[in-house]
Length: 430
Image 1 (spheres, rainbow, N blue to C red):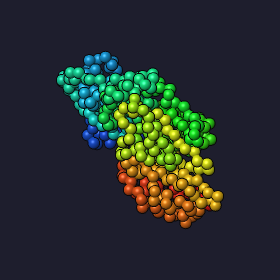
Image 2: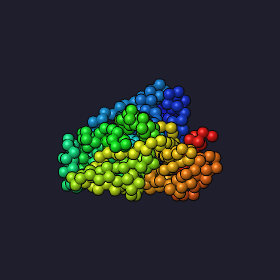
Image 3: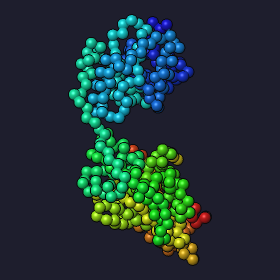
Image 4: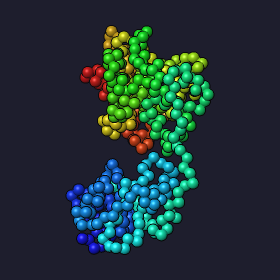
């Protein structure tokens, strides 16, 4: 039995434990030096997917003879602290009630209580502060009332009904929800006031060939694109792009129409639509209209869609002999937001020269863009090493990417030229 527990002892014993591990002990030691954790009799451990679990902590200390006392979730002190935590966080989506409170009662003087203060450090523990138990109720004054952050949702079963609701104004269309749902709390952008769930509108589904074009419904999911024989035959690059988006759960829910309307400059299907001269068909109670993809994205996360309109489908022309290539660069090979994404399209003529060249990029500007200066370098040429080098230089000279959390401007500029040169080399076979 340990007769005295303070953080130095806790660090030593946890660092020696084979399950809990020395890396966690190092993180705790750094927290102590930073003043976030102090010598304690009581520890609040909260399960975290990226670090040792609360069970790991209790098992480690029990093996060392430290006695624990669990506090139930409905204990008034636990509930009060949970409410205070909710109030301080502004009602964020994180779990409010801690998984448990454990007391490391190596001594009988449990006159101090630790509770969360702020911030993760190294993903293992959280900043803690001492609370005088006699003032715990005072520290845990709950908010008078916490308004719901979930907007009302309506799910029409007919396209005409959806049009009528959109004509009223104030509705945000909800398709797969893989982007929109994270906005509900208001932590990322303005939360929607009301959501129009269009998932049940079968008129917006399906993939078909019509008038020498591939017609793809707005509610076609990335999984649908990957499994479609028509896409595999006529536009396999779109299935290739869809395969790079998220994991299976995202691909099962995320839709082509959602990727278009979300208008992220990093949207992986958008350069493909630009490079293939796709048209986006919109509908409302006023009728339908078609907009070229090149004219659809008007600014950062802004589109030409009116508030009363829905994206109905995408129409991709299929000229004979066209070749299309796709490249994406992210932090990982999968489940990564693009640092740079590119699509290249051309039609070779009888002499082997390239015609109708399209070079489109994402993640290098406020919108997905075509690089017409680069297209001019490639148009009408026989592609070889010299032309490829000219095209790479033209890419670097014609873009002005930014630094952000995913990458730097210099990296994006260099990689944008490099992936085009590599695609040209593979297409030319040299």
